[in-house]
Amino acid sequence: MKKHYSRYRAALPSTSLGGYIGIHGLGGRSPYLNRRMDWTDGCLAVTDAEIDKLSRWVKVGTQVVISG
Image (tube, rainbow, N blue to C red; front, side, top):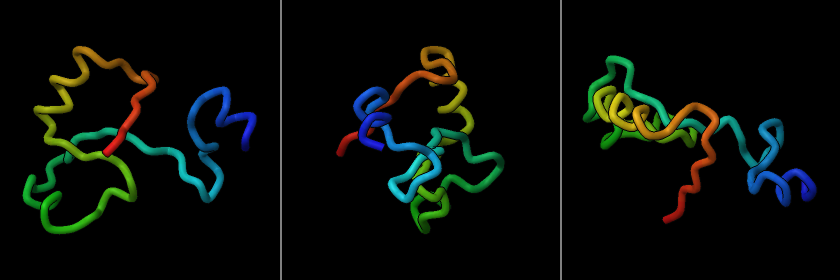
């Protein structure tokens, strides 16, 4: 795990540390759902319109650092 993290700055997907985190659209769900409950299992969900805009600049596979 340490070797993978030092190389990719991310946890292996198949460990309890996490993985398979994505940024995705709502897929027909109400935008209010995001405010009422945590349904994404760690992913970031944005409106479908926002994901369309984001896809113009960020391609699949781009490393994204989320901090807060």
